[in-house]
Image 1: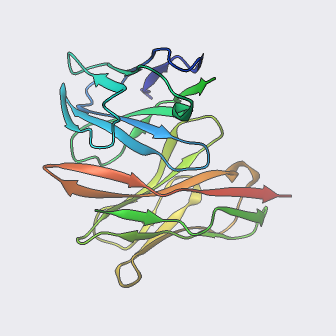
Image 2: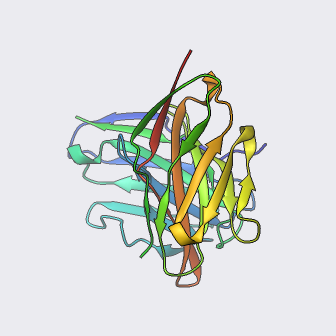
Image 3: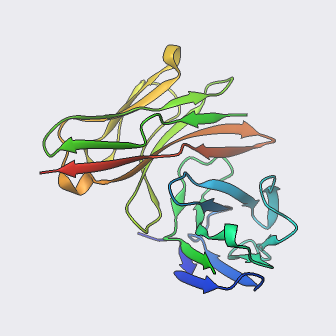
Length: 114
Length: 115
């Protein structure tokens, strides 16, 4: 079965540094999501793409976070500068259409900011 | 805005015992409801979903859930738990917003299975 690919699997960085995460959704999936999951909590939506367009970034801290999906396929989430409170699991998910049906999740990137 | 409440942070059951995980949602219209499971350090996997129709839905791994509109609940059940079911379970609600659907997750219930 096709999977959502994410890299890196783990990332350790110092505060004030820049970090970037990459996601490759399942082929043909138009909708891509970035979620942040703090330890002990549920996933929180950061940004949602429909093809290459952002349809929801209301919870994205835009002063330090940015996300792009230039060709409507893979996506990059960037944090600059990283802060201690950014330590979390960053999950990417995709679905076939904008009416979610089922979300397919990647294994995530575990970020630790020191 | 929609929201999900999972009142039980942690549940322990014996292997072979029955299981019920509680989920309550808040949404003004008919919601789309989901249960996902997450193993440690992994992404989430869909167990089952409710969109419409029969209020008792069957999922993978022997799980089922019942939608009760009057109680705004969507509880997950399994008649006999296996040690491999130990994981964290998330209830989620999908709601239409601006032409697309936004999925909001609860805080999760961690399931421990003892021999």
